[in-house]
Length: 217
Image (cartoon, rainbow, N blue to C red):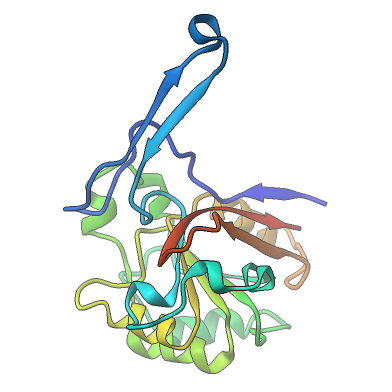
């Protein structure tokens, strides 16, 4: 068994979506001075690697705390979208027909763009690829239960892709990293159906939450 951590480390200095409040992570007590160590955090829910629930864009939608834990674990499928500015159904079709198992209902699709290498650069928010609405609808039709990506999100204002996915109860994982390691595994002939995604958000009663995401091969 091999485990790949797909999560950005939450540090004292985190990039945020333009206009969002910057988070704080600071040490407020130390063993040497106080006899115990203690950190304090103040953050919005959409910082670093996190999961969006329907309430983020759907009125009266579900919060993450309302889901059973099974929602956050599933068979993984990787889509290589490097070099694409727009991720459409044509890419989905051509990329997945080469995998003998294809997409199944209940899968977790991860989209590899390589943008995680620019996580702390302005370009990460201004020049990321986008998913088309047709692509989002195809994922809903296929029965995917979560879609994750190594970029800041699937779309830009007015956030129609968010609304299509979340409106159909497809959760969104944003700001992943290390998908290149999954791609490398596949290039070496790894089984196309032999790995799963475990994406566990903190159980906040909210529209989103930070998450620790791993791939288990």
